[in-house]
Length: 588
Image (tube, rainbow, N blue to C red; front, side):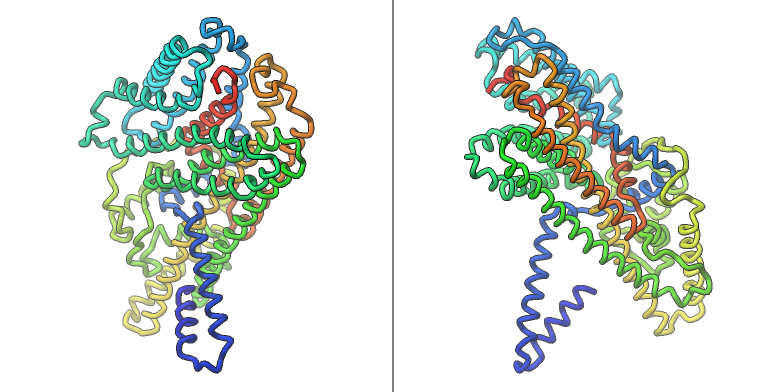
């Protein structure tokens, strides 16, 4: 529809006589704005993917079986394990680095535990990303502890030869850790999974690419922080306003490129890696600067980016709502068969079309993925529906997907959801959908060759297909933006909690400035930053709840719980690796 309007404007500009001097400038400005909008959408991560039908079914299942209490607990407790691990490691007392590597035996214990914890968290991704590898708890432990022992052994040898502390130990260690991880994977799982004929080789390659991308960015972040320290104070505002957003954009596209085949997980991986690192960078900068102007500039730049994202998602939501209203208006001639529905119930409308496309005269849904890249928890009835659709020819790419190992359907809790099974809104919608489908089928049988009937069928199919396509893209965009806002909420709080406890511990003297650089003003600025992010998250929740009748907080909890292993691995890596990288014992 939008493209047809553009074509009409172009043709009218070419046909009308030159006496109308105002038409051509207006048309030119419109085309320029549309090109700019297209370029903007092309670089935004929220436009880089869409939900699969299986993921939508899984989200619907989660909403119907999860209470608000569980959602709140999942959102609040998710960052706690990584924070506790970081604080417990800081409780191990260290010695002065100048006393040598032998006297710092407690540091080597700490390093062993740190690498083992991060390694186990990273190997736990295998449970979700490579389920057919059978990554049991003991196997993951063997890989983690073997990698840790090999890395610490290498570090001790380097300390004996080069001296202690080892220069750039924490920065260059990622290369050695990556080598040791691959060696331990071969040792524990054997060569068969890595062979070209192995069924799990594609998933294993995806996992290794994702792991390599995470380690690459984790090593680049400290370098970016060091370079920021060399920038003159009067020019650091440029970093806040220009360079940091550019770095974030480049890093996000790097992660998207490395995880392109994991489309259902792209939003979560980008948010918990890139946005985690950037939010931590902003928190560190705010805590170390003495300039209120610079602190406010960092906060203002972040708010500006959030406003742009809100504007973008508002435009997308309005587009989908127009499709919903058009779809509802087209079925008004069947209103005697149904109750009055909710035209904004986005998830219910999309599910009605994806579960029975033929009822809406859709013969093919090309480009829309039926199956997710990895198995998702769904009910037995939903799985049966997906299998029926997989056999049909509606979803063209369904047959090209490899056989997948189904995960156990373990998420079954009390029913208290935003779409309860007996909710009047959903019941009314279901009644309307069934009645409309029956009337359409009777009309097709009675007057199949009628021109009006054929036109109505084609219009119904086009509107329904556009609704599904745009709706699945909107859900992906909402998930990504919700995750970004959530990460930017929790990272400042993690940083404040970590620094507040560290200030009371003996190890604080081994960090730059000791415990003296943590003032009340710095804490206040970071808490203001966190409070603004919490407000942004709540505004997003209320906006989408009112517009589309689904809760982004449910969507957030759905991601945090169903992708728990991947989320926790990224949080442990970011928290343990980045919070302690300035420790003197890791060298300069």
